[in-house]
Image 1 (cartoon, rainbow, N blue to C red):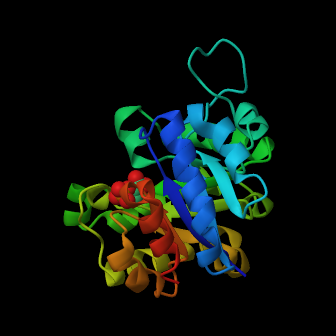
Image 2: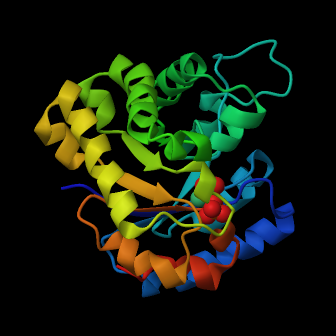
Image 3: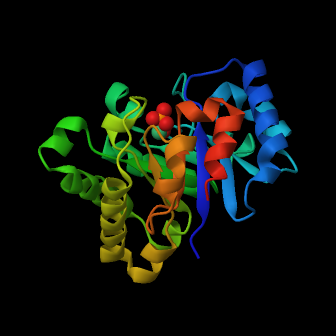
Length: 251
Ligand code: PEP
């Protein structure tokens, strides 16, 4: 059965001590969350080791926000999948729209990154989603389908067990605009169909597909009630433990 997941993406926020305090607060409140909802915090690279210590023995998992597209060597400033695994990460986010938009993350690079992440034992939260002009032109289905085909279709059925998709309409990220539950459900169901097209209905049924984009305590319940929405990737609201936990309690 597919997992319900609520993952917080801290982005480039919090100093290390602030991040440690935030992680402690999440762990302290994690017992309030239904046992079948998996909590994940995705932190900046600098925070991974100290946050891993805070999470030890808790039910909260650690994720990175990105990883390198090369295995190791002379790539100044990059952080490899092996490093992330050794720091205690269980997951890494890949393909976030901010990385696609500001750092030239292409689908080709995402194939390399996903391959390395999986080879090093990490699970992947792969982000897909359309820009505002693409939504307005009615191209959102095509854009998401292409992103999934270019990246996920390069992997095997077994790999898919360790991949989660996050649908994040770019126009809803950090803007306060949320996709309506109907808009989100429509595209989640479509994404599941695209996955089924290559890997079959059983794999698609098992796949967790998260919604991301201005998800907050006031709208999470309606979004999570949709049959094809299996949780959320939460940006801004994950920086307050109370809001993050309230979202996870919406199930
Ligand atoms: C995100 O960046 O993954 C995200 C969903 O951000 P926000 O919740 O702030 O829109």
